[in-house]
Image (cartoon, rainbow, N blue to C red):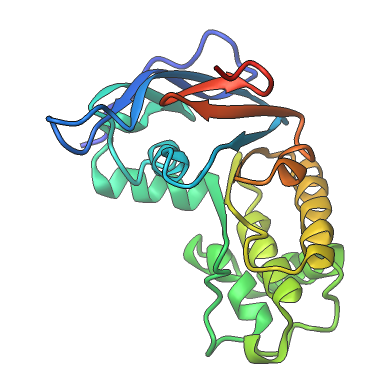
Length: 237
């Protein structure tokens, strides 16, 4: 059963975490301990931290893929912490986009069909779907690549496909988890520039999870996971 939360008093707030706690064992300190976080409409925020500090756990909580032990996660008028699995899945499908380090494109589908997956799930008619996908591919420099298969693409091109798929349905929130981890430095820089530009053009808000300061500095604001909390870059203990 979906339970609605009271929307934020500020309509410009897209995602708000309040006193968030997540622990995996009762005899160990929590991985996340009392995090507060606010993401505003159109904002692109990077969250930095070394491996193992809980960045991916935090991303999973933001996406409603995991549930906190305490606190709330308010997104799109809902508290993700109390949504059932079906409601959370529908919300992600409608209002979120994801980009991962490992691309996660389907090898047996063409570029066009990979990018079109969110639109197919939404039931968009084929002519409108093809127009939207074509425009998206043109905007990321992959015009004319629609009939190719993933095996024919470079790593940078595969990540462009993943970005296109994440944004083609114009989500309110983009979540990117180490999106340049499998790329060479030149491709990584191009993808980071493209990711920021596409978040802007789609009118989305974005969260970039990374261990790289260079990647983080492409965002509007940089936070660091420090002692299971989020602090502005430069304020770490």
